Image 1 (cartoon, rainbow, N blue to C red):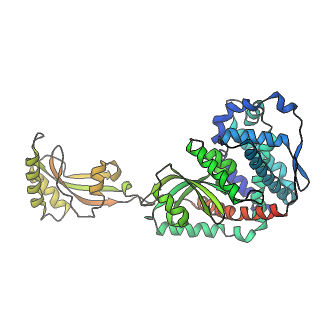
Image 2 (cartoon, one colour):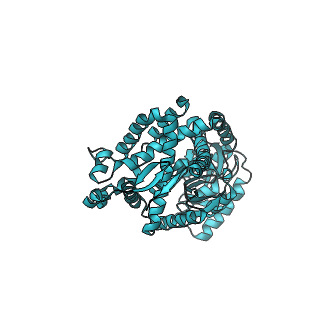
Image 3 (spheres, rainbow, N blue to C red):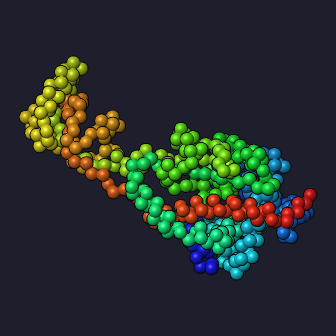
Length: 433
């Protein structure tokens, strides 16, 4: 049973060994909470989850870690409450994974430590060494990633029918991309917050607003997503691959369409969950970018002195347009250019549309084969262009494995929140102090 799930996720996480890299910039600050008093303070149990403890040391260590990563400005009590709820959710995930896949705990632990070592390393020091020297107790950090690694296996084992069709879903999406290469696409990042029995929608909304405030103050989106988002994309800092705009629900699509690149959108409520989004990019023409096309243009140039007046240029342009009116092919356009005696090359080959000036792009891109431009002023004189050839490069379609990962993330996000909520309602949680 484990063969179809655990190795798949390990491969995925190995490919994204940078899931913690967005936090490297704060490593130098870990000394802030390397306090002698922390090690000497009385350690107490703050909650029991199905009989297993979460200690005050676990809580303080995770709060310090999150505060440095997220820069959220909230009251100490609210921050403590929210962090404890995160630890409880992770404990429930860990317990479910241990019950079903306990034999793989050591393997998952090694994978989690490797991710930490790769992501937090500084010079010759491994990530583990860096965090320890910064005073971070690794257990609560490591346990989070162990829980995440095995949680995927739990879901795939618990809901096998939903995940068994990933190959077909990926192939179907590839066919849709091929058929709709001109459809607008969007690239975004997401933070998904799921209400819980102990954090209802009102409290979750308050947290979402605090996150938006932090992002408006230039907090790192990826860092916050990696620690707070409950979407599958949390492991990659919330980043979502390019997707067709039509795939988005209207409640998300409409504000994203109006937003500028880099703008934060939200909080937005969809199906009882709260989304915070960042618009990272937009392709108006999808995969078929007209600026990537290669052209061959024929031109006829009416020579003019460089100091010709506006009236002279206007008159020359009108005369040239009258002469090219009867021109029906690029060969005839080239012949006319020779007659005009400008000395300019009649044919311009292998021109990429994106290499032209923005003004000329706007004029040339709409032209079909054999169509002519208006008379345009250039240093050589007034010029009329005709499109002879247009070659659109093959669209850079994503491979099946990339699309399969996208479909996995969709299913994971959809199923994970619902199943975790079910386990939370069944769990026996005893809060202390």
